[in-house]
Length: 213
Figure (tube, rainbow, N blue to C red):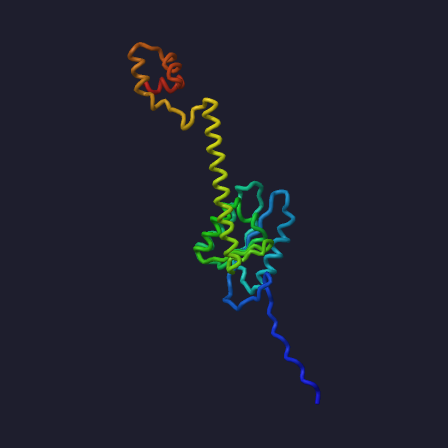
């Protein structure tokens, strides 16, 4: 009799080294971003994102490509966030964290919002999947670094203000002519010329004339 063949093992595709669990069909929002001088990598990012979504069995509901230089330019990213707020996507998929977040604080703020909305987040390069316990632990570490970044900024502001005071600079909003209207009128009634009033009170001649008209 022919020897019985061992039953073939069921295939279990893995993602980030973990077995994929059966789940509902997720609607993915893809976000790719490059600088103005690096536009040739957009196709590479999109291809990797689409291949990953296919391996996970996700439907691509929205795809955003953004080109821009500077940390503050993430205007088209808002399209994905709006889609998440309208519950039109279930997960955001990006190539790398720095493509998504302007800073650690900005990254954390958007991840917290997505988590509050019940929308997942995956970054391919960092193998970060916030739908898993390991990914959520990484998000907690990001919160620590974001607070560290904010504290550094506060220390820099305080140091700058202290240095300005040592140099004799006046801090706060500049005094406007409107706050000195009473003094302007009093000096004018005393016979002081408009030019002298402007000099004494350190405001513009035009402001003096405007108050006295």
